[in-house]
Length: 153
Image (cartoon, rainbow, N blue to C red; front, top):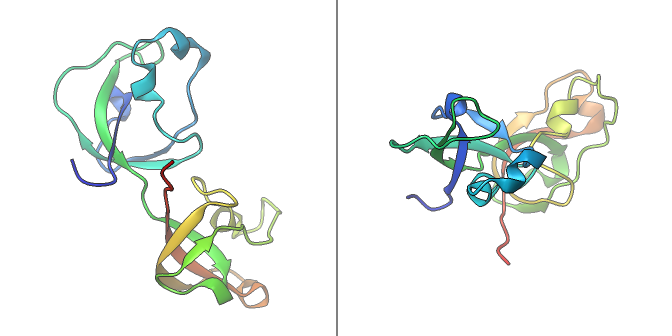
């Protein structure tokens, strides 16, 4: 298994290489399942991409009608709009969402991307360019691709 991959379980219908998902946590019904630790070993709110579906058995599941399959996932890079002054390739930042609180604002999803929360430590992998939209110059935002830095305890 490659470095950075996490082995977990996902619904058999959802187990497709390349698919991304946000882990929302366990359901109450999962409390009595013997596979709970394998299914819930991801960070709640984290974004994951399926890199490999292991061949083999499907496990019964209280939630997924067709059972669950063993997969290997990674945390993929995330596109985000940040202050242009902080947008330097290779730099390490502590993510703070840009000041755009209106949910109908065209950049809201890039300012508040799923899988990234305030205080997350990240490395900027790539500076893509100016953030799209009408207000990019007045707000001074750049579109970058970041990878969360996982700090082991």
